[in-house]
Image (cartoon, rainbow, N blue to C red; front, side):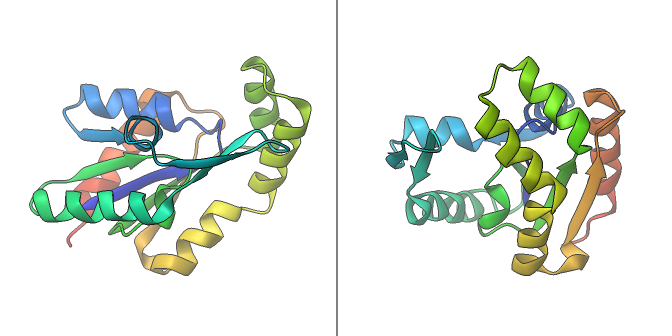
Length: 163
């Protein structure tokens, strides 16, 4: 089973992914795969972001499904919900807290604003529900939780899945 761990940048995906790995879950950082496998088609200079070859990334994910049909694999990325996955976990954060987190990471003002706005209108959750339906999407608010607390919540969710 392929699980997308997704959310607006800064909501805690990578931190939570580290705890999931420590608990023995197979977690794949799609950003690392994108770089390693040279899946960046170009760069949007204005927005300072990658243009990813989604067809190649989809093929990579489909091959994971074929290669490990009995395993649960968690795909960590803010675009993982756009791929052929079985279930999506969307991490959320209050816009104010998200802004603080992105400032702490020294993000540019334009990128902070763009991501805070995306979080306010729940772009990722809406996209995930459009792709898979509400019954296969769980949303978790990370605003006042530690990554370890969020990890425990995700483990509870995974324990209830029957696909």
